[in-house]
Length: 166
Image 1 (spheres, rainbow, N blue to C red):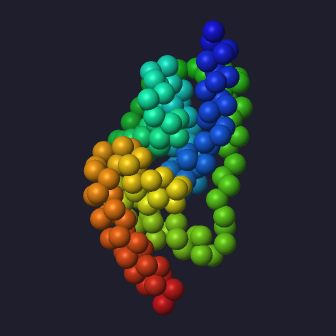
Image 2: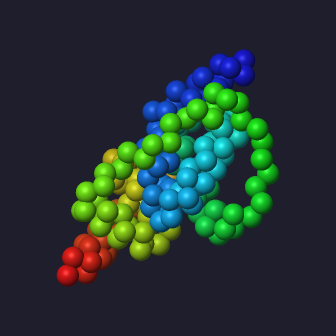
């Protein structure tokens, strides 16, 4: 039973690893902090997976857990974490960051890092192709407010990127 649960979790997780990498990249500039947070997010996903009831897509649930973990990590700044051993299978999750490294991508990530936590989450979900309802579900606001926030965020990002280019 445990192996079946692990297998299902790993299949879902491996299909959505980009979510975790993007959350870490947007919320943490230091590579070591990103790696630590990546591991913490995977741990939190695994720990809460038995409670995942599949009322939403795995990706929506994973975003919610990843964002809450990242924002909580920022607030707590790595207070002592109760550790629970993970099986070898869970420890073999690929940790490569697939984000592009071209100059415009780097500029975009640096600009996104200047946004508020909620705006980071909204733009991240937007870039992933999430619709307003899914974004609203993840961040806890109405879908209409997501639309309003996206217009403002796009304008803010354009200004931030323009300033960095000048």
